[in-house]
Length: 160
Image 1 (cartoon, rainbow, N blue to C red):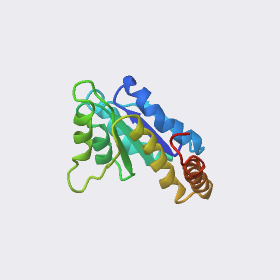
Image 2: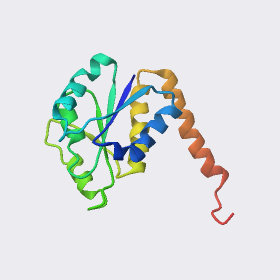
Image 3: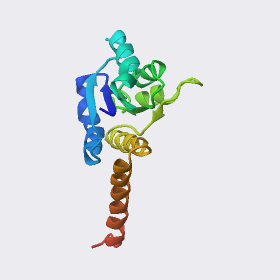
Image 4: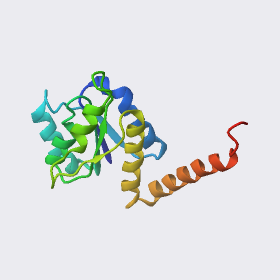
């Protein structure tokens, strides 16, 4: 596995599945796991500390509400951690976004947009990071980007 996709609860999967779908598009192997920063803190520490030895190169962490999962993961590993704020019912994900983006100096978490767009972009960004050392993944990302560009060029008139 090259990417770990973790989330605070099973209910986060409908959002985080978009990261997995993007990684599938680029044939990047990944694993998924529920790891709660609040309910299973020892499991979180074990997961993050063992990730590099297991071949993980990037971790995507999705969480809602207090959303400590990505930040706590980053505290336990030197691997890149990408945080996805899962949209919450109480504050529409703004609470999650602020919890993830406001990391203290010295513990970095790349924070993406709230919800499914953020999850998909986390998968894309993880593939771009993996692509730095894997020419096959890099070529797949470049093809994806070229196809997006061509779609717009082929359909410039919004009225048609």
